[in-house]
Length: 252
Image (cartoon, rainbow, N blue to C red; front, side, top):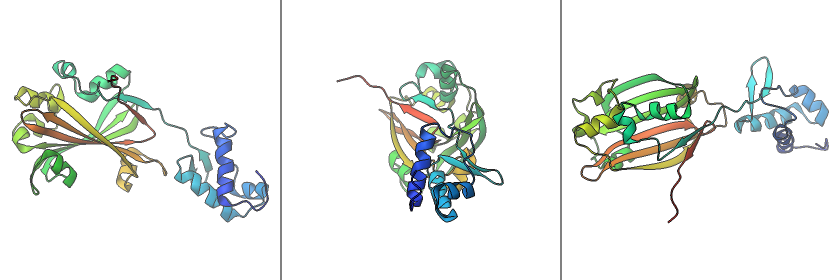
């Protein structure tokens, strides 16, 4: 990098290139701010701005009293859409995540669960085709995979499908919520998923241990019955740097 009147953006770009080239490897500390300023002939303010830019991109992590380190990328989990909710898994008494993690050879854990009744968000009400003010069963969970926070999942099930059933308990029984719905005659015929991205809230950052600069993937899944309409809407939140969602389909 040239030391001639460098801007914060130019300093950030130079460091970004060095990180990408492996000059600074994951987990390694960058030179101190004072050393960078001296080597590049810029002010400390310029260096701080450049490091803030890299932090906001999720490339570096500052550690109080220790310096600024190149962020170690977390393990990425490839999750296949068509394979996640197979009826044969439910028939075998396996919930969706349990079956999927078995196929992938990953360890997983249900970290927290809360079951309640309440009014869902507007976009969920619309998908469930319920009027404003309607109450549903809300199942909120957090999961870890291989010891790292992986997912916050919230399911919304209309009372007419879930009231007085194990779906209102923390333990729904073998096969999970979808098994309970189908054994009551609410056959699931298809799923639809909508995927969007956004930045996490402070609470979501804490729950999923997301560093600055890393967005969330929001997957909104609706389970449909041809006879009964939308049976459930589920929102899954994933740190975008920890999951790849795969959706293969045949050529038409």
